Amino acid sequence: MIPVEGIMNIRKADKDDLDQIIRIYEHIHDEEESGNVSIGWIRDVYPTKGTAEESLKRGDLFVLEENGRILAAAIINRIQVPEYRYAGWKHEAGEDEAMILHTLVVDPRQSARGYGKAFVFFYEDYAGRQGCHELRMDTNATNIRARKMYQRLGYEEVGIVPCIFNGIPDVKLVCLEKYLG
Image 1 (cartoon, rainbow, N blue to C red):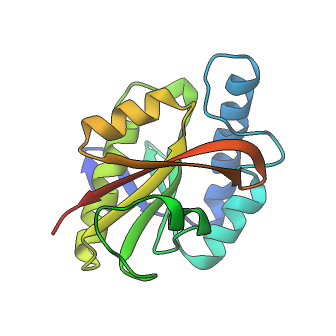
Image 2 (cartoon, rainbow, N blue to C red):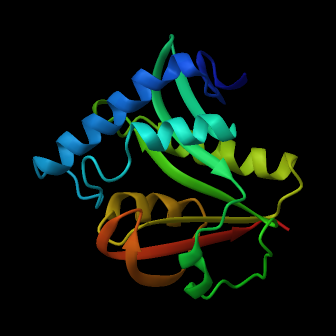
Image 3 (cartoon, one colour):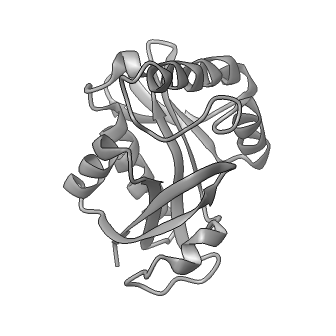
């Protein structure tokens, strides 16, 4: 476990965490459908239980827990999605040379408490420990809150790629990068 701040820890997920991660996905879908947030995800399309299960099998699913409760989760790996070809990156990075943050989720009932920021700091540290200096991530253009947070943390929007993304039509995929080298 990596201590982040006192009783908050970020670690690799295990199968016992899946139910809590899926509940976070469901809470986000509830908030999206009620109009409280605009992330651009669709229930039963993305993210789903299968999203978490596949990542758990690959060993790249991480969770943030506090007092035994999972409050946030993300996928961290070197898998660059095909849409990244069109992003206009400022730094060249081959297929295995960039660390990618995918599907960062924070339980909406726990928003504005610094969990997303803590996860991004963990991601940066993790990438550095893996010898990876090129950081990449993406979000939907409609997710203004995430875009602002990433920009405050030093990520530059390098391109917006119109696409079908993770089965969701009409996405304007905002690609962001930060170079640590």
